[in-house]
Image (cartoon, one colour):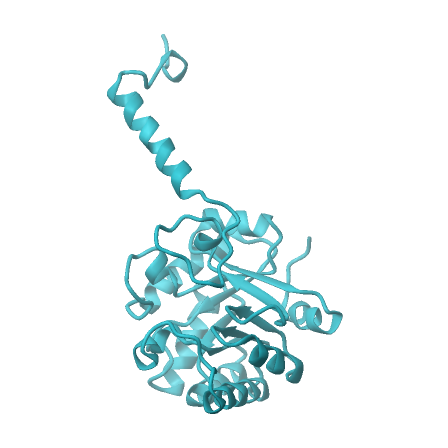
Length: 267
Protein backbone atom coordinates (compact mmCIF):
# COMPACT_ATOMS: atom_id res chain seq x y z
CA UNK A 1 0.00 0.00 0.00
CA UNK A 2 1.40 3.40 -1.00
CA UNK A 3 1.45 6.51 1.17
CA UNK A 4 -1.92 8.26 1.18
CA UNK A 5 -1.77 11.90 0.12
CA UNK A 6 -4.19 14.82 0.19
CA UNK A 7 -4.98 14.41 -3.55
CA UNK A 8 -5.88 10.79 -2.74
CA UNK A 9 -8.35 11.99 -0.09
CA UNK A 10 -9.89 14.51 -2.50
CA UNK A 11 -10.20 11.77 -5.12
CA UNK A 12 -12.17 9.59 -2.70
CA UNK A 13 -15.14 11.95 -3.01
CA UNK A 14 -15.23 12.00 -6.79
CA UNK A 15 -14.91 8.21 -6.84
CA UNK A 16 -17.62 7.78 -4.21
CA UNK A 17 -15.27 5.85 -1.94
CA UNK A 18 -15.80 6.37 1.79
CA UNK A 19 -12.96 7.82 3.87
CA UNK A 20 -11.95 6.30 7.19
CA UNK A 21 -10.30 8.29 9.98
CA UNK A 22 -9.34 7.32 13.53
CA UNK A 23 -7.48 9.03 16.33
CA UNK A 24 -4.14 7.81 17.66
CA UNK A 25 -1.98 9.33 20.35
CA UNK A 26 1.12 7.12 20.52
CA UNK A 27 3.45 5.01 18.40
CA UNK A 28 1.94 1.61 19.23
CA UNK A 29 -1.67 2.43 18.41
CA UNK A 30 -0.57 4.46 15.38
CA UNK A 31 1.07 1.34 13.97
CA UNK A 32 -2.01 -0.76 14.69
CA UNK A 33 -4.40 1.74 13.08
CA UNK A 34 -2.12 2.10 10.07
CA UNK A 35 -1.77 -1.66 9.61
CA UNK A 36 -5.58 -1.92 9.63
CA UNK A 37 -5.67 0.25 6.50
CA UNK A 38 -7.23 3.46 7.87
CA UNK A 39 -6.93 6.43 5.47
CA UNK A 40 -6.30 9.26 7.97
CA UNK A 41 -4.81 9.17 11.45
CA UNK A 42 -5.83 12.19 13.53
CA UNK A 43 -3.67 13.12 16.49
CA UNK A 44 -6.64 14.66 18.25
CA UNK A 45 -6.62 17.16 21.06
CA UNK A 46 -9.12 14.66 22.47
CA UNK A 47 -5.99 13.25 24.08
CA UNK A 48 -6.83 15.76 26.83
CA UNK A 49 -9.88 13.74 27.85
CA UNK A 50 -8.76 10.29 26.66
CA UNK A 51 -5.11 10.23 27.77
CA UNK A 52 -4.58 13.08 30.23
CA UNK A 53 -7.77 12.77 32.26
CA UNK A 54 -9.10 16.30 31.79
CA UNK A 55 -12.83 17.05 31.55
CA UNK A 56 -12.35 18.97 28.26
CA UNK A 57 -9.75 19.41 25.52
CA UNK A 58 -9.02 23.01 26.54
CA UNK A 59 -5.93 22.39 28.78
CA UNK A 60 -3.96 20.62 26.03
CA UNK A 61 -0.83 22.55 24.99
CA UNK A 62 1.02 22.90 21.70
CA UNK A 63 4.11 21.18 23.08
CA UNK A 64 1.99 18.21 24.18
CA UNK A 65 0.38 17.98 20.75
CA UNK A 66 3.76 18.06 19.01
CA UNK A 67 5.07 15.37 21.38
CA UNK A 68 2.19 13.03 20.58
CA UNK A 69 2.18 13.84 16.86
CA UNK A 70 5.86 12.99 16.62
CA UNK A 71 5.22 9.57 18.18
CA UNK A 72 2.30 8.87 15.85
CA UNK A 73 4.18 9.98 12.74
CA UNK A 74 6.96 7.52 13.52
CA UNK A 75 4.42 4.70 13.65
CA UNK A 76 2.53 5.47 10.44
CA UNK A 77 3.75 4.31 7.04
CA UNK A 78 0.68 4.65 4.84
CA UNK A 79 -2.04 6.83 6.37
CA UNK A 80 -2.25 10.62 6.18
CA UNK A 81 -1.31 12.08 9.57
CA UNK A 82 -3.25 15.17 10.69
CA UNK A 83 -2.40 17.16 13.82
CA UNK A 84 -5.19 18.81 15.80
CA UNK A 85 -4.44 22.44 16.66
CA UNK A 86 -5.23 22.92 20.37
CA UNK A 87 -7.10 25.76 22.05
CA UNK A 88 -5.38 29.16 21.77
CA UNK A 89 -2.71 27.87 19.38
CA UNK A 90 -4.25 29.84 16.50
CA UNK A 91 -7.06 32.05 17.79
CA UNK A 92 -4.90 34.95 19.06
CA UNK A 93 -3.34 36.03 15.75
CA UNK A 94 -2.67 35.00 12.17
CA UNK A 95 1.08 34.97 12.79
CA UNK A 96 0.82 32.69 15.82
CA UNK A 97 -1.58 30.40 14.02
CA UNK A 98 0.73 29.96 11.02
CA UNK A 99 3.76 29.43 13.25
CA UNK A 100 2.06 26.77 15.38
CA UNK A 101 0.52 25.04 12.37
CA UNK A 102 3.96 24.86 10.81
CA UNK A 103 5.31 23.15 13.92
CA UNK A 104 3.03 20.17 13.25
CA UNK A 105 4.71 19.63 9.89
CA UNK A 106 8.25 20.69 10.81
CA UNK A 107 8.53 19.10 14.27
CA UNK A 108 5.65 16.64 14.45
CA UNK A 109 5.95 15.02 11.04
CA UNK A 110 2.27 15.55 10.20
CA UNK A 111 1.05 16.20 6.66
CA UNK A 112 -1.74 18.58 7.67
CA UNK A 113 -3.49 20.26 10.59
CA UNK A 114 -7.11 20.43 11.72
CA UNK A 115 -8.63 23.72 12.84
CA UNK A 116 -11.96 24.22 14.64
CA UNK A 117 -14.26 27.03 13.56
CA UNK A 118 -15.57 28.85 10.53
CA UNK A 119 -16.00 32.58 9.96
CA UNK A 120 -14.21 33.38 13.21
CA UNK A 121 -10.96 31.71 12.11
CA UNK A 122 -11.13 32.01 8.34
CA UNK A 123 -8.27 34.54 8.17
CA UNK A 124 -5.99 32.12 10.04
CA UNK A 125 -7.02 29.22 7.82
CA UNK A 126 -6.31 31.20 4.65
CA UNK A 127 -2.90 32.26 5.96
CA UNK A 128 -1.94 28.69 6.87
CA UNK A 129 -2.90 27.40 3.44
CA UNK A 130 -1.10 30.30 1.74
CA UNK A 131 1.99 29.29 3.72
CA UNK A 132 1.87 25.77 2.29
CA UNK A 133 0.21 24.10 5.27
CA UNK A 134 -2.74 21.84 4.34
CA UNK A 135 -5.76 22.40 6.59
CA UNK A 136 -8.71 20.21 7.49
CA UNK A 137 -11.71 22.21 8.70
CA UNK A 138 -14.04 21.37 11.59
CA UNK A 139 -17.61 22.69 11.84
CA UNK A 140 -20.67 22.03 13.99
CA UNK A 141 -20.00 21.02 17.57
CA UNK A 142 -16.63 22.52 18.48
CA UNK A 143 -15.15 20.98 21.65
CA UNK A 144 -12.78 23.92 22.17
CA UNK A 145 -15.73 26.29 22.57
CA UNK A 146 -17.71 23.92 24.76
CA UNK A 147 -18.31 26.56 27.44
CA UNK A 148 -19.92 28.90 24.90
CA UNK A 149 -22.06 26.07 23.58
CA UNK A 150 -23.21 25.07 27.05
CA UNK A 151 -21.97 21.49 26.84
CA UNK A 152 -21.63 18.74 24.28
CA UNK A 153 -24.93 19.42 22.52
CA UNK A 154 -26.03 18.78 18.95
CA UNK A 155 -25.60 21.93 16.88
CA UNK A 156 -27.60 23.21 13.91
CA UNK A 157 -31.00 22.03 15.09
CA UNK A 158 -32.65 25.40 14.49
CA UNK A 159 -32.72 27.36 11.23
CA UNK A 160 -30.34 30.12 12.33
CA UNK A 161 -27.58 27.85 13.63
CA UNK A 162 -27.99 25.45 10.70
CA UNK A 163 -27.49 28.34 8.25
CA UNK A 164 -24.42 29.48 10.18
CA UNK A 165 -22.84 26.02 10.00
CA UNK A 166 -23.72 25.73 6.30
CA UNK A 167 -22.12 29.10 5.58
CA UNK A 168 -19.05 28.14 7.61
CA UNK A 169 -18.68 25.06 5.42
CA UNK A 170 -18.86 27.18 2.27
CA UNK A 171 -16.33 29.65 3.64
CA UNK A 172 -13.91 26.91 4.64
CA UNK A 173 -14.15 25.31 1.21
CA UNK A 174 -13.52 28.68 -0.41
CA UNK A 175 -10.50 29.22 1.86
CA UNK A 176 -8.97 26.00 0.54
CA UNK A 177 -9.39 23.34 3.23
CA UNK A 178 -8.99 19.85 1.75
CA UNK A 179 -11.66 18.20 3.93
CA UNK A 180 -14.23 19.13 6.54
CA UNK A 181 -15.01 17.34 9.79
CA UNK A 182 -18.66 17.82 10.78
CA UNK A 183 -19.39 17.00 14.40
CA UNK A 184 -22.68 16.70 16.25
CA UNK A 185 -25.09 18.03 13.64
CA UNK A 186 -28.40 16.67 12.28
CA UNK A 187 -28.16 14.17 9.44
CA UNK A 188 -30.15 16.38 7.07
CA UNK A 189 -27.78 19.31 7.48
CA UNK A 190 -24.75 17.06 7.00
CA UNK A 191 -26.31 15.63 3.83
CA UNK A 192 -26.97 19.13 2.47
CA UNK A 193 -23.41 20.27 3.12
CA UNK A 194 -21.92 17.07 1.68
CA UNK A 195 -23.96 17.48 -1.49
CA UNK A 196 -23.05 21.14 -1.87
CA UNK A 197 -19.30 21.37 -1.32
CA UNK A 198 -16.72 19.71 -3.55
CA UNK A 199 -14.35 18.70 -0.75
CA UNK A 200 -14.87 15.53 1.33
CA UNK A 201 -16.88 15.69 4.54
CA UNK A 202 -15.98 13.45 7.46
CA UNK A 203 -18.68 12.94 10.06
CA UNK A 204 -18.69 12.24 13.77
CA UNK A 205 -22.23 12.26 15.02
CA UNK A 206 -23.37 13.65 11.67
CA UNK A 207 -25.12 10.66 10.10
CA UNK A 208 -24.36 8.36 7.20
CA UNK A 209 -24.39 10.80 4.27
CA UNK A 210 -20.90 12.17 4.88
CA UNK A 211 -18.03 11.19 2.60
CA UNK A 212 -16.26 9.53 5.52
CA UNK A 213 -16.40 8.84 9.23
CA UNK A 214 -14.07 9.46 12.18
CA UNK A 215 -14.10 7.96 15.67
CA UNK A 216 -11.97 8.17 18.78
CA UNK A 217 -9.99 4.92 18.80
CA UNK A 218 -10.50 4.31 22.52
CA UNK A 219 -14.28 4.56 22.02
CA UNK A 220 -14.18 2.07 19.15
CA UNK A 221 -12.16 -0.40 21.23
CA UNK A 222 -14.31 -0.06 24.36
CA UNK A 223 -11.43 1.04 26.58
CA UNK A 224 -13.11 3.93 28.37
CA UNK A 225 -15.32 3.55 31.45
CA UNK A 226 -17.82 6.34 30.88
CA UNK A 227 -21.07 6.02 28.90
CA UNK A 228 -20.55 6.46 25.17
CA UNK A 229 -22.23 9.17 23.04
CA UNK A 230 -25.13 8.10 20.83
CA UNK A 231 -22.97 8.17 17.68
CA UNK A 232 -20.32 5.74 18.98
CA UNK A 233 -20.29 2.10 17.92
CA UNK A 234 -18.04 -0.12 20.06
CA UNK A 235 -16.38 -2.73 17.87
CA UNK A 236 -14.69 -4.37 20.86
CA UNK A 237 -14.97 -4.33 24.67
CA UNK A 238 -11.36 -4.42 25.75
CA UNK A 239 -11.55 -2.67 29.11
CA UNK A 240 -12.71 -5.69 31.13
CA UNK A 241 -10.30 -8.19 29.51
CA UNK A 242 -7.44 -5.80 30.31
CA UNK A 243 -8.52 -5.48 33.93
CA UNK A 244 -8.90 -9.27 34.20
CA UNK A 245 -5.42 -9.93 32.75
CA UNK A 246 -3.86 -7.48 35.20
CA UNK A 247 -5.85 -8.97 38.07
CA UNK A 248 -4.56 -12.46 37.18
CA UNK A 249 -0.98 -11.14 37.16
CA UNK A 250 -1.48 -9.64 40.61
CA UNK A 251 -2.97 -12.87 41.94
CA UNK A 252 -0.17 -15.00 40.46
CA UNK A 253 2.52 -12.78 41.98
CA UNK A 254 0.79 -12.74 45.36
CA UNK A 255 0.29 -16.51 45.23
CA UNK A 256 3.88 -17.27 44.23
CA UNK A 257 2.84 -18.66 40.82
CA UNK A 258 4.72 -16.03 38.80
CA UNK A 259 7.40 -16.24 37.68
CA UNK A 260 7.39 -20.01 37.14
CA UNK A 261 10.11 -22.25 35.84
CA UNK A 262 9.38 -21.33 32.20
CA UNK A 263 9.85 -17.61 32.96
CA UNK A 264 13.10 -18.11 34.90
CA UNK A 265 16.72 -18.24 33.71
CA UNK A 266 18.57 -21.34 34.90
CA UNK A 267 22.32 -21.82 35.23
